[in-house]
Every structure is written in C-alpha cells, then in structure tokens.
Image 1 (cartoon, rainbow, N blue to C red):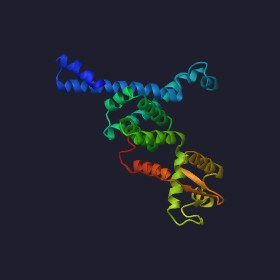
Image 2 (cartoon, rainbow, N blue to C red):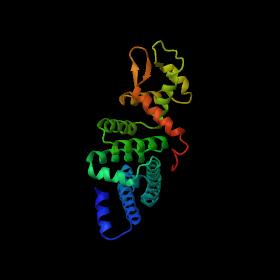
Image 3 (tube, one colour):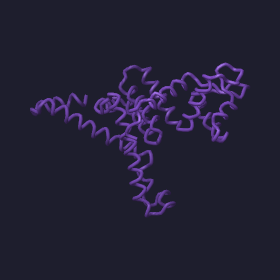
Image 4 (tube, helix red, strand yellow):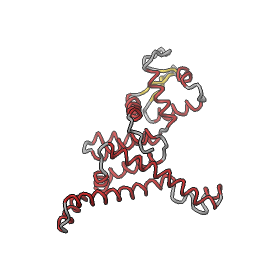
Amino acid sequence: MIGHRDCARNRSSGMPEEQVDGARRDVASAEIMTLATEVASSVIGASVALQGSPMAAILGVASVPVIQRASARVLDRRAKHFGARLRRKGVSTEQVLTAIVEVPEAFDLFRSALTAAMATDDAAKRALLADVMASGVLSADEATKAYARRVVTSLSRIDSLEILVLGTLDQISSEVSASKVPGAVTRRDLMHAFTSARPEMMDAGLAVLRAEGLASAVDGSNSWRISDYGRRIITEIRSVNSDPDGLDGD
C-alpha cells in the first residue's frame, strides 16, 4: 500500500504524525493531478496544436500558442471541477491513487471517466462521471464495479442533446400520452416538446439512446419507451442539477 510504505518511512525519520499525514496527502494530490493532466491532455491531443498538425495548417502556425493556452485553460477548469466533485463526496485523492495503482481495472475506469469528463462542457454529466467513477474504483463489490463501468461507457457516448431527449422522454412518459401503448411516447409527442429542434436532431439523439439501452423503440407504433436504466441515469443527472453545490467549479 502506498500510504503504509510512506507512513513507515516517515515514522522512522521522526516526523510528527500530523506532518506525515499532510505530506502524504500532498504527494497523493500531486500524483493524481499529474496523472489527470496526462489523461486529460490526450483528449484534445498534445500534438493537436503543434506546428505541422492539421489544426496549425488550418488556422496558421501563429495560432499554435493561442490554441495551446486555450485548450490548457479548458482542461484545467474541467479537471478542477472533477476533482472538486470527488472531494465534495468525501473521496480523497489518496484513496483514488492507491486504488488505481494497485488494481488495473480501477485505473481503466478512472481513465475512461476522466477522459469523458474532459471531453464535455456539460457540468452535470461531468459531476456524475466523478460520482460513478469513485463508487466503482473504491468498491469491492463486483456488481457495483460492473455498473460503474457500464454507466461511464454510456455517459461517454451521450452529451447534452441525448440528455435533453432522455429527460423529455421520461417527463412525457409520466404524463398522459397520446400513445395507445402503455408507458410509451409517440414521436409526435416528442416533436411537440422540441419546438426549436429539427426532427433529424431528435432522431439522432434517440438512435444513440437506443444503442446504449437507455430507451427503446416500440415495434409498429412509432413510439419510444425509456428503459429502467435510462430512468436511473436521468434521475442521477437531475439529482446533480438540483444540488446547489454539485456544479461548483465549472
């Protein structure tokens, strides 16, 4: 265990207990942020703004430092929000660091969750990714770990449009629907709810939800039904949005 080795080493040096703990937390925080930065930088790509890259060819070589600074600010803001969410949930950086160093599957989950979090500007999605990642990384229960992996995968494949469609589908399904199929929502009902959205956008969102098992099409009725899994996901997202502190740091 990382913490145990550090404790033994520091006790032999005569360091006070509180200084030992503080030093260990500082080291863990520094290491986890270094790892987070490495993973986050791969989202945009360290070479995306380098001379000779497609980005530089399109925008000009002079744009390279501007792009690098802008991408660094975006990633830093999102990484800080992700870390703040973990701390708010009582998860320490040392806990996460120890888990991902000792268990390869935990590192894979951490990397997947952080990559998805760095790739979205949806704060609620990013906060939920932090919550789910922490539960999966720190749990000894295989079912919890499996669920965390499934949720992180689904969240990495949906974004603001799909979340909006999923929430609308859930809301309408709980109201009186024009559909003759219990629990189902007609495409017409959905279109009425999206007065400013184009039909092809809604259809694209529904297709992604279907692929992730969050919603399903009702055969022969041109209707859609939210799955239990989809309802659980949208409930969690709404819970984050209703938390006054849940979106801090963005």
